[in-house]
Length: 330
Image 1: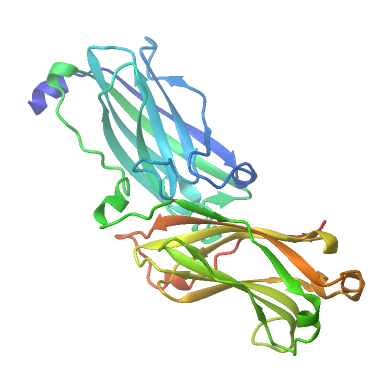
Image 2 (image 1 turned 120 degrees about the horizontal axis):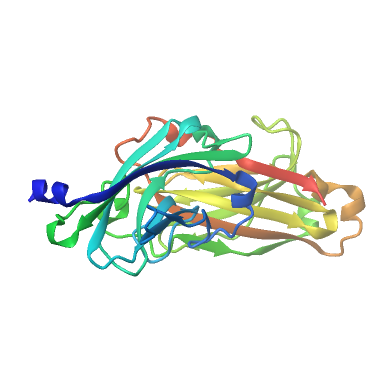
C-alpha cells in the first residue's frame, strides 16, 4: 500500500518563504482566542486547484485542539475532488533556535482544513522569538497531490498539537478577563505606616488560579524595592499542568498614571508577585484634590497554557519574564 501511495503521487511541489511580523502589531491585538495575523493566499502549483495560507494565532483558536497557547496554522483548500494533499512542512525561527517539522494529509475537498504547530511563550523575551521588535518565520513546504484510492492515513506529527488531550480535564476557558475598580479611602492611605500595605479582594479564575493586589503607599528600604509607592499583583496557579500569561493595565486617570505589560506565572500552588511603581498616587498635589478615595482602574486578562512536557527546562519557573512593560505619564 505504501509503495502504491508513493507511485500515485503527482505534481510534487517544493517551496519556501519568510514571513516577518512586527511585535507591536501583535501586542496591539485583542488578547482573546481567534485573534490572528495572516499571509496572502498562495497556490501550491500553476494549476491553481489548491491554495493555502499561514496564520499566527497568539491566543489560539477557540473550541478546537488549538485553543491553548500560540499557534502557527497552515490552512489549505483543495478544489480537486479526486485527490488529497499531503504536506510536509517545517517552521523555523532562527533567533530562538526553534524548528518544528510537521506532516499532515489534507483529506477534505472544497473546504478549508488546517494543521497547527505550537509556539510556547511567544512573548517571553527570554525565548528570543522577537529581535528588534520583529519575529522572522522561515517556512518550508513540500506539497504532494495523492490519488484518493491510494491514500494511507498519516498522523499529525506537529509537536504539541494535542497536548491538552493527555490531561484528565482541560480548563473551562483559554482566557479569563477581569475589570475591577479598586477604591481606596484616603484616610487609609494617609494612616499607613512605612512598609504597611492595603490589600484588595481576592479574585478567582474558575478553578485555575486566584489573584489579588497589595498597595504599599510608603515602602522604605524594603528588600530590593526602591523607596516609594508600589502596587503588587499576586497570582497563585491552581493547576500543576498549566502556566499563566497575564496582560494587565493599571490606570489612575486623575493622576495621569498608566502602566501596562505582560507577565508569566509558572509555579504551582505558590503565590507569585509582579510589582509596579506608582509614585504618582502619593504626590501631594494629587492627594489634596481627592475627596474621600482614589480609584485605580484595572484591566486584567489571564491566558491559560499547558506546560511543555518533553522540553521542560529545569528551574525555568524561576525566570523573571516581564514582557515589554510600559509605564508613563499620560
